[in-house]
Figure 1 (cartoon, rainbow, N blue to C red):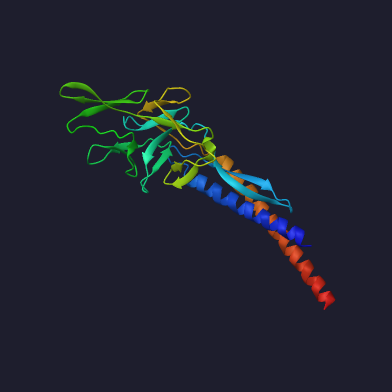
Figure 2: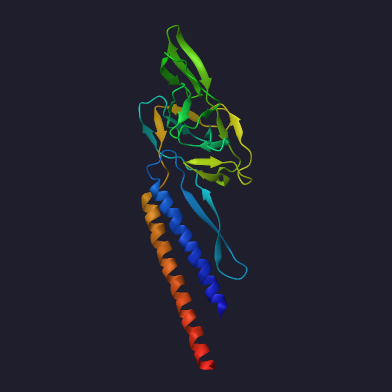
Length: 237
């Protein structure tokens, strides 16, 4: 009689994680470059299913014009490389960049773009080409100040979430393949645009309804089984 209870418990766990994942997706519907999470489950040998992993769905988000040349969207495959607070390297599709006090290009959290790009003081009218070349206007004319690179992976869905809209390399993702935008399978860079989140609000609302129904159904199975076991124990006593 414990078999149905065990299966229902795994069902409760799966439904709970589906709700948490969907809530996280909905909370990031306005986050530039955010990729929604998707629950992956497998069957248990003893019955029921369990959550195996949460992978990122890397479909293209909509392009939002901003007219800010340091707002960058990737059209196609690839991720920006940035430093992370731990001193390592992370990856992101969020291209909301700006300058820090030293003229260094950083993301909204202050993480520096890799390779490092610095714009000399007094330069203005920044322009960024589809191939990632960064130029600025100085007194002496147009000056090339850096080259943006993108990274791609054999399995981008295998990247692990690191918080702050950052992703880290994992065994599942494989090692990054780095190059200039437009090279090989890498996408191009659009200056003056941000990539919107790929979260579909209607889809997430339906998923929450289904997950809540599954949670309630599994809870009722546990409750009924518990009452049945209690009745049997009362009869035996």
